[in-house]
Length: 88
Image: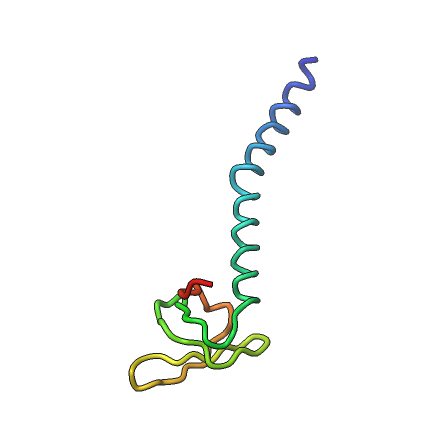
């Protein structure tokens, strides 16, 4: 029985590591991926760099947002969108 205690201890640590670190991170990544795939024209967004704007066009990997009072258009990668600010 003592020969299996080391293996059981290691499996226990792996299970704890999985449920406390890996699984929550996977859930968070899935939620962010869903948010980015559901972007649509007119959404108010914030980028990971802190730029706030309104989406003008959405393509496969590219998003064009309008920022500022002078309506400057910025082309960004879709992965750079951090949050959708308007409530759905």
